[in-house]
Length: 363
Image 1 (cartoon, helix red, strand yellow):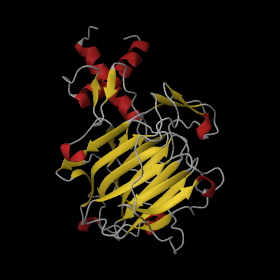
Image 2 (cartoon, rainbow, N blue to C red):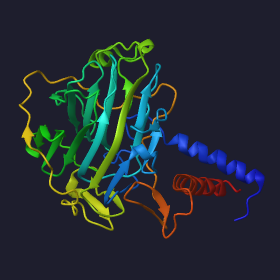
Image 3 (cartoon, rainbow, N blue to C red):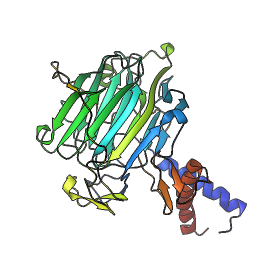
Image 4 (cartoon, rainbow, N blue to C red):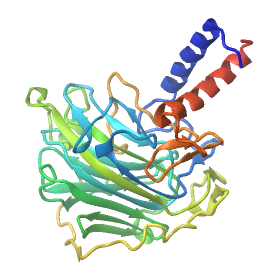
């Protein structure tokens, strides 16, 4: 295709607009399959292992602020009001396991989060509050129904700000297991969830840090985060050294068969839902923590805060035909590694969409 300078400039402008238009808040979906017909979700369909000490990968895109990378991995820093750096997967999993090594951020009101969330607002959370270094909050929501806020628990995670700890969320049709180190800190079976509230639809993975104690937030959020946050004592940083994600299903995309959001109605294009249930191997644990004795924390839905000035990404990119994701999380052309994966992937995806848009306008 021949591009004039004017057309090329217009394509790049349109591409920027497309990227921006896909960014929005965490607690709602740009297309909720419980309410309307939506495009299929791109599937991971395999296992990837990402070492963030080696830098950024295409499998996760930044929003709300950019993480930085060093010998400790991906660094999510909250330095001022409105900061909420995070990474979001370009893919979805339909049941699966997320294993990650993380060091939580310190600071009153600072929240470090790892969230699995679907387009119809099923959700599984782990959240660490900077005011203590001995607990993690575990939580779940179904279909965006948050009325009672009674599903959260405080679970032990000693010394979580000073050392990297392995955390696992293992999720299948029958139960969700949260582990800290090699200790199961919480397990919830399907029939123990509130009626209709068991998470069971394709999930993205989102993680990052934000200031729940930011004075611009509602007082209920500030109180939950044990704020307010004093930014003069910062900056405050969370680190994720590495992450391993296993999709317990196979295929290229996941499609909602109806508006119920029940897992039996999810269709895998080119694969099978729950067809890779042994893909991650056995869950390695050696202990089970005592049941929590305190009350249920009033944990808000959404898991990761909305940045005040930078849009928060909730969409996803389809891997273009002729491209593939590697087990290390890079996206490369089939049979070639010559192009810079991150630039080529974003350019091919966004530029193609922008070109189609311009063509429709007569360019």
